[in-house]
Image 1 (cartoon, rainbow, N blue to C red):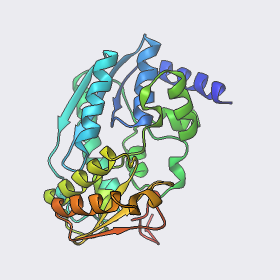
Image 2 (image 1 turned 90 degrees about the vertical axis):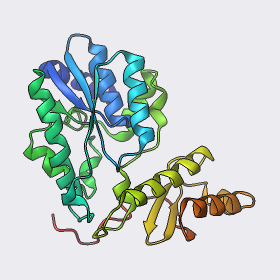
Image 3 (image 1 turned 30 degrees about the vertical axis):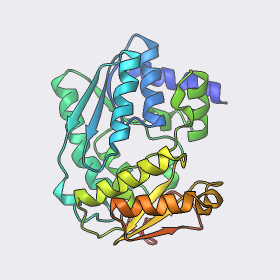
Image 4 (image 1 turned 120 degrees about the vertical axis):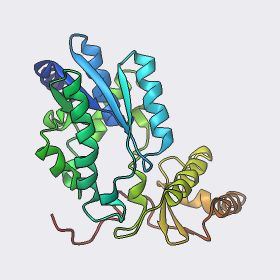
Length: 267
């Protein structure tokens, strides 16, 4: 089944011929970009948008990935869009409309026909208002079109020898902040520093959700017991307080996508 989907993906990319990949540095867009590049006969470029709410680690890894494969890569710096400064429930829609407009401009100015993103077949099942923006802007999602799931993309990435095949998901930092909250760059920096510290300690895929001056830590399965044991607990608490949090809490439900989503979103 995965092999037939992989063949379908190749066919989709070959038909498009000329395109820009909106490249976040995550597993999905990395696999898509690598596959397009490996076909060898396509006119492609990768474009990464750098904003204050994208983790710098993701940007650095995107740069390393494209450099290691000899892929044309452009980084576009964009300031914080004021229409999402208060983190509205439809911020993903507003954000993608804003950021992808820069990708559209780049593609038009440099003779690329299409814009692609790394949306996969699993993404349609979650609350993702940003998908509506992609449809309105005619952004193509070949992984979803080929019905490739996240699990299958990881398997194909492993087969292709991509070291990031098991890389944890890394959504933008705004997902760590409650909706209808005014966002400052200092808040984003605190979250980024806290998550980077936990990543360096081996707590991969951990989220630090911000609630006022409280950090709510969501861990992947298996990490909750570890993080409450000494000396890890004291080390985590002390370091997060140095970063600027007053209270440090551990969410016993663990990490789950969309934990900050509204219960009854307007779609």
